Image (cartoon, rainbow, N blue to C red; front, side, top):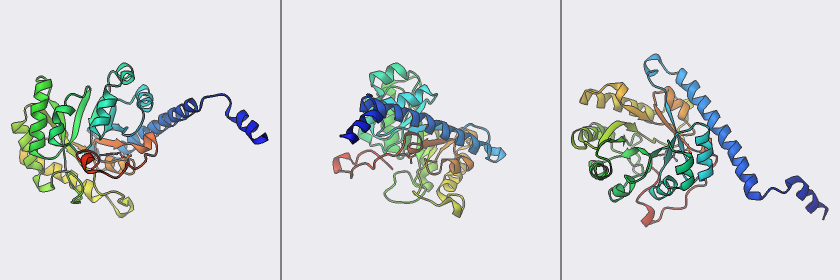
Length: 281
Ligand SMILES: *Cc1c(COP(=O)(O)O)cnc(C)c1O
């Protein structure tokens, strides 16, 4: 009896749901500010020749609530990343998000199948697809995008498999220039803006620069040399919660950070065959 009374006193009359929402909000604001501070500090540690651009923070909101997205938006965050098309579709047409986040910029960072092209191009406020990794997918998205917006090309990045792990998506390093060339020459509705990689998980940076990030940096050099592009016109999307500062120091212009902003994320359930079509890596 006594225990029950104490509990009542401590927790007051706030409904449980609201108490959690408030805590989430505080944490998201803190998490976001903390990451932004670190992005800024890491940017200033870059060598002179990499100082030409301010890195963009993409807040990866997969599995996280609409309320958390709105909180981050209300504290200035504009770019958000998702890696399931269904989840992104639902969030992008959520009435609260449409009302409160008019300038939201969605990044699709999951694996993309050709048959999903018609669906992804209909997502409102789709800013960029970071995971184009074959000419067939590029063509499919190019054709679909032309049907919904023939005026502004859609920004895309080419995903590169820098770690050579078979379970990771992405074009092989040696094929990156060919795919970029294909997009530039054959996909008028797409705008090539950069290269993206995930890299091996859990690399220990005390061993020196992450070799996967270095490989993406030199891949950009190859692409630029082969196709006559300037380094400044080709972004690098690399770095997640564990290593975004390190990635920025090596030249990342686009970091994709989830759990450091929104908190721990439960591992997704084992992938079934029907769900294998899209998602992580
Ligand atoms: C989930 C995800 C991230 C963010 O991961 P965190 O470790 O939570 O920062 C970044 N990039 C891709 C492609 C992801 O799927």
